[in-house]
Length: 119
Image 1 (cartoon, rainbow, N blue to C red):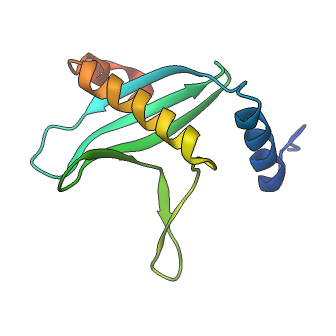
Image 2 (spheres, rainbow, N blue to C red):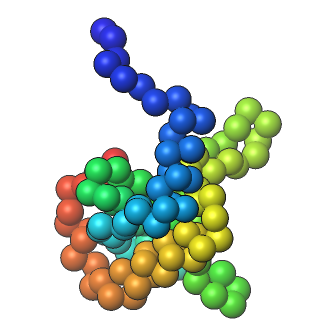
């Protein structure tokens, strides 16, 4: 089986950076699934960009003083967690966090029934 086109990691990063700097990338949807427990993890979010690309497993975390988002990550062979995807600029990160936290605060948990969260 051949893949017709597979963008390498560097090309994808350059594409996102270019879109962010041109202010052409838009967050078109944010879905939130609240987690019912007593841990610091409060929710998972899925973020859609330009109705064409989705990022799953963004976590909403309650810190000591504030609530924030954590990007999807994986455990490396060295035992260190590394982000799989993350914002390149602080402006985009602030905007992304703002959109996710707005959705988190404005959801009543109905998104939990959404099949898109059955990863």
